[in-house]
Image 1: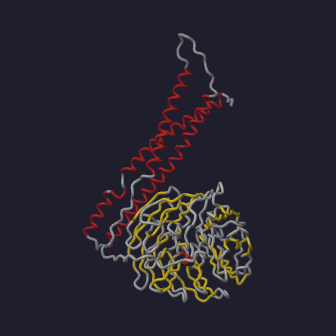
Image 2: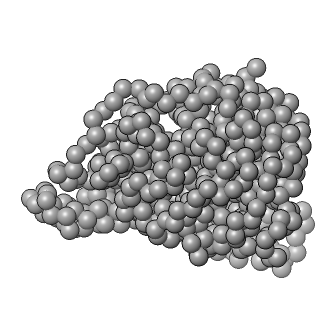
Image 3: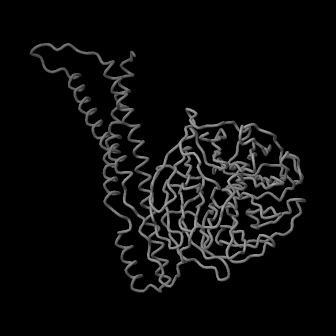
Length: 564
């Protein structure tokens, strides 16, 4: 490639700038990595001093809250630094590539001047040697920084030490395996039966690759975009999509990938003229549908609520009012007996509504306390009493699913609440980023049994058995807790964000990151990575599980994964 003197001069300037930039970033990276490796934020003198004061006066609620606040700030600062190191790795690599490329172009185009005996060294030769020394220096420093970052990144300090817990708080007693046994064929709601994040059945695949087709039974393009997760009843899979004002419900044969029918959910009386504002990545079809033996129901961000039979025939349709809020509506539907439960969160009101599935009649509406959230309702059963539980701002609340009556409420959340709760036979687990993870004993006199502020997801919902609780964060961390006592059993950093919620299936936990890689770990008290299987495209939707097959909605396609 022939370059002019002007081009070469420009390349030299670019090379010098990127070379200096790369060296500076490399030194900062090495310093930051050493700092992260050697400094534990929880050893901060101010935090230690307050903790010592708390230990001497464990009944002091104000001091306990101060410990939590300082502890949270220290941890958040640590993770912010860690994200900066990750970003620095890629900036460093980019700078090094540009520098080396410029040097290669320059060296291939500079004229070689003949050396005259007994004459002074040619200035161009001297400059070239200097450039070569600079190139070698930058290359060595860059390689050291990049290698150090990737070697140390997986071995950064473990911050799983628990904050001191108020000694007056009582811990729930551990219990044997849960009696909750989801159906292996149906996956009827967001996160499965009762929206708990537990799949029925076992022997689900762990190895696949969307790019080369390994264990991909079928792959189809969904006609319209959406962030709703797939739900399943029998051999039919249901999913929604929307573009502009057009909203649709799709029924897909889960065994073949054939779209059996498409139903429009647009043009409904009361539908707003303008599309409500939503988050750019979200859109109109974020809420997942709900299905039972008789009907499938779906709701969209403009408030259109539609109920269809399994053949796509409309049973009823209504607009419940546009749930306008800062990010757009995202609450998924759930069914209890013959009632469709709708969590309605807008700037104007927050409520829980119960519609009769057969007729669409509104049986009750209960106004909720607090502000809009982006979570979804979950059904739990405590001491034989079914409850629908909502993670709200600031209250986590339990309701009677038949009458809508409020049963209990605990004020413990703040900010943008998007994760739904996890439940087991004894406790409810509520969490949101920059707040806390709270294990709540539901019922009369509901109270927080234990809490932690170390691993707090911003979107992904936790999943729990009677023994273990799993959370996946927007930082890429996954943590496993003792569900009853709150001790951190293990943590692992996966280096990518999680929006999809973890699902416990068989003996494993399936954790889908935003790059579309399924991180599969053993559902146990010790960390064991089983596999990391990609679909080959970005993904934010929670997968569905049915009959030993996994269904994943990516950004462009819907996948069926099967080892058979």
